[in-house]
Length: 441
Image 1 (cartoon, rainbow, N blue to C red):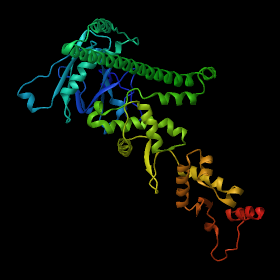
Image 2: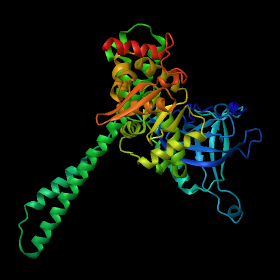
Image 3: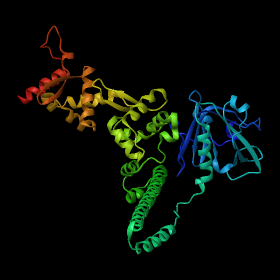
Image 4: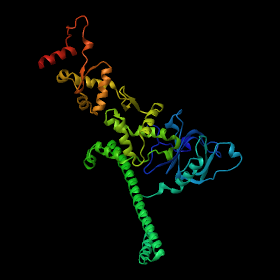
């Protein structure tokens, strides 16, 4: 029924909205009702998450409902008017309300390109947030009309020319007496102020170019994904390189709309956790299903650009995954090392690869180190050591500690007969080890 009045919003696997090209989040509100008091047939969206972007007003249902079926949005291009909040004695005793008018079709569906009918939508803010601040950002986003903005940057610096002319005339005046000293001091301040203005103009230009690069990277990523699904030839790979190299480059460019404390407010860690769950999918696939928390911290901060997060923010965001229905989890080994792991990742598969490595003649004779396991598993030595220690905890390996470090051997004690320790079963690990040792001697 909701689709009859509002278009459905597309969400990621973690429940984050899929943003359009150039779309950026502006503000979030929790526990918000969306309804139309003038239209009784309009659906009543209750206690959801409201996300304001530069292009849309998205409503996401609470966790207890199915997110993909009832998520909806109101395009800001359909908004005709935003009403000022009504101040009365009655308004002091109920939840704050934000009302705005949108264009609609004769059937009452919100129309993006305008319609003959108008519908007034009401937002009832039930959470402990600041509705006035949200209303101000709502006005700014609607007036900004980012959905109509073109990629070309326009701007003139005619003011600088006038300032430089007056400055050149002032420099001709002689420095005489106290008045001359004061005039020289004023000229120095004006020169410093002009330099700062030029510097910030260059910085703004650089930031705008950086935003264009992020948008370009997003378009190329979508084109790459669509190309891999629709084309069978390798012509695109010859022009842009391999798919893996392209994904690495796009990953390093940045996240289009990173979650910030300013936009998310009290929902910062919750939304950061969801965005991080979407981000780690590609690094996890390359790392074989498990990656060090430190590596993710570096990759995620690099992708966020200037919106850096602290290690505590990252740890808290990862800790919230157990409350959400996401495909990743935070795992802590007995040694204290914390990693991010895919829920489909199987330790048994890793132990099987370690076992096959341990049964090689050289490993049976001399054992293996963490570096040897790292080359086989394709992970960092620190991660390989954690795998080996976990396999030891399962009884698969034995450990030898020496001044040269740790070396691990296959566990033969499980196959020894306590009644006859010299008895050797055919085709067992013990017999394989005896054969390897006999050959070396």
